[in-house]
Image 1: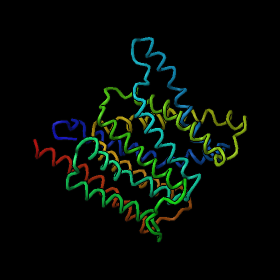
Image 2: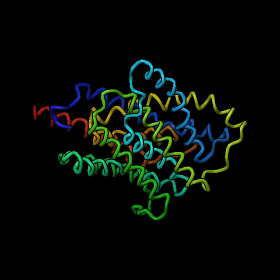
Image 3: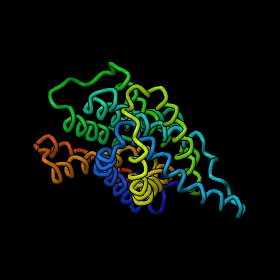
Image 4: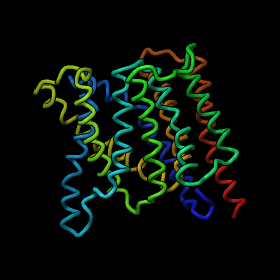
Length: 303
């Protein structure tokens, strides 16, 4: 994002994205509740794409009757972002959690490469620093004593593709710069939901047992609550951020999910937290602050 196009609410949007990413770091809490209620494996992912779409559908109909768009005009953005979320969630069904996390969270690398290719935007000197800090933090938190994971199975490749899809959607949003957020949001749940259903068909052998009718009925109010209080508001922020603060900064800030997820799990469960988690989290936070501060100073100097 160039100096002339830097959004006047750069800091506010960055902070809102930080909060949204932090909320995703707490997502393991409702996820475990859904699993205990019978929505195991990939069924939880499917339901959490379909239910928000059904909730937003009357809004789209109302918009259409009032002369506005139905909300499906961003198929590529919706498909890319939805595919990224679906691949990330379903990769855990096919490979080790740690491998999936590391391969997915190298997203900032893909974002930087796609910015070079499609935006003709060479990274500034501080981007190399933020990439080093961010990826070092991810590696320290998740790497343990293993080597850098090279994709070796379908789950690894799905996790890697998930990060690429998220990066591509962010760059696409920066290119298109949509005026309103609702069409992107609805496109995400619609086209992303279609991708999730298609992917589920091919992964049907690892989705887990189909939930019973009783499980669906019991969990439906919770799914609606999660959609209204979590999925819709966080994705409004997440999907609105790249076109306003830039895909590069976006891909760094969303790593804050790791920090919140790590510490919340340690506080609320019996999972231990050690020097790896503390040091890695500090590096990730430093990467986000560095990208925000340096990009702002660079733009100010250009002005």
